[in-house]
Image (cartoon, rainbow over all chains, first blue to last red; front, side):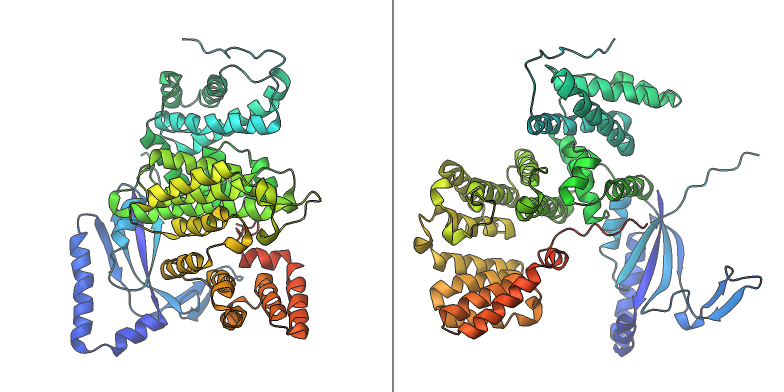
Length: 120
Length: 412
């Protein structure tokens, strides 16, 4: 099965990261790279995202015109900061993987909907 | 090969509702494991078991319990399965292969329990699934037992089954490295059933005895995992409660406090057996919250009367429990025991220190009232007592503080 891991940062996490010294920060980033390498056989892609202040949200449910606003779709203390697609046998394997994730403090696991291929 | 309903019962073999429930419970889980193994489709197996259980509860009171209830349930489930799945040839073929009687491997039974209690499911979903699939309760029985609507329970089950299928929750026994956390999840579910059944005996009268289901589940788990001391601890805890259940209410149905219970109504034999079970578990030297809670209850259960209670030992056990699982409620109970080892004044100081956490809990004020009265502070005692009574009148809030299950609303 395929899943997307949505990595979620909190304000506190961001502050703690900012407060780190150069070498601690490098070490933290290194741990994330190592985790990615350890699970490379299951990872099918993904990216770290630019910070939430760069987000733009478009709402198409309001009326005739799409409404464009500055910022992420939910204003809150928790923001999506990256995503990774993984392919494993079942949810327990993802849970196992995620249990050693060294980065941000929250990870949402969402299965990818399997859409049957259109027959041509 | 033809499947017919075997051995219709004679007319005199009528069973009470309680007996029916027990017979269904003995067989529903086995049927579920067999169906999951063959179909590899948990959601479908769950539906078939529920259909068979409903049919049994409808027909057995009229027709009598069949000589082979398991074969009867199986035949119904199988026929329903074939009916429903004629379109899906592979399921039909698989169901045809299913032989009966079926002796599920112990691994299969564990898989079923661990799947129902998977941590990716919400607590109410874990409870509803476990009761339906492992214990064979109907949706209506679960709703009555928890005083929620059938719709709420049905939606929980539907959502849980969808999650299992679409999120890829596996049907397996956890690996050794996950087993500790996953077993705690299963034990929490059983413990909540005990708690719910224990606290609700008075308010729900004739409704299903969830303590009975909790004991049955714990006993199953103990047979499957005899070397896990916390499983034995929880089973002992449940049995120690049940052994004293008859003394908890007076003839009018009001609750009798432990101090005033007629201990000759306790089942001494059951208490001794539970204490031995606990001692065997303790030999593994892996103390845990359930073993410690059971040990505390055993201290009370083994005392001939209130005055000869071993309070020193109880305080020590509470200390160990707080070390493993800190909680203001446990602290409150410890301070009640401290009254008998350190005196009411020291106990009151400890209770007062819990004000912030337990200000809205009636037992906190009731305990204070009791201690204040002992110390001759009558006016304060009356005020605390009033506060306790106000809070008792708010069952919803008390439910939260006692750690009852929050089924949430019906909205998705």
